[in-house]
Length: 224
Image (tube, rainbow, N blue to C red; front, top):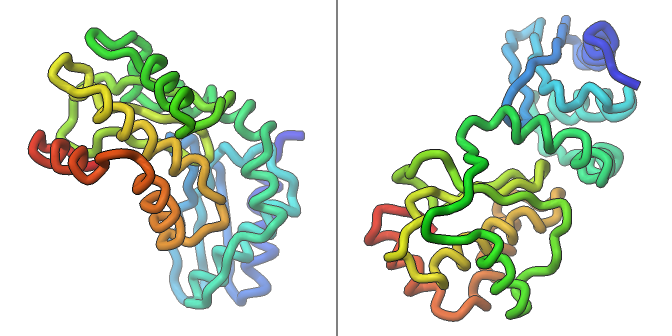
């Protein structure tokens, strides 16, 4: 059942009342999964990713309570109910195509010099990753002077910097860049940012020569 703007607004308003705050909320078609807000002492206005349109009211209410708790300065993690819904296979099946369509950085063309599927196969054959059936991987449309790749954990999408689509790029560099993003996708969603980074770093230490690969990327104006 699709959640209407009215239901979303009523749910956030109800939670806001519990926190002494006059509240309104609406869905917005963001590219990424996010929730933005403006707030004063007695009111708050939320713009909520429309990826949550299929979320049950109890999930929206729990999410709103977590956000309000964080706004008032208290530590609070997402509830098991929210995490279970966001990480369910059905969420990826429904939302991933929308995310891919909205992300204008993504190219649907094959690489000119490098093959992403061949890279994934090398990583699988060497036991660094599993099948990752729901994961999608793309080149970016344009080379950028940023990271070698980036990813969305919730959407299970990896985008590899077009700058690495070159015959001058060693295969182990491309493979390591992709492995790091797969490791990020496979992290437990409930981990804190610090624990997530530690988990990824520990996994990358198992990849032969990763320190040297990081240096290679740095010399070429990219981050590992």
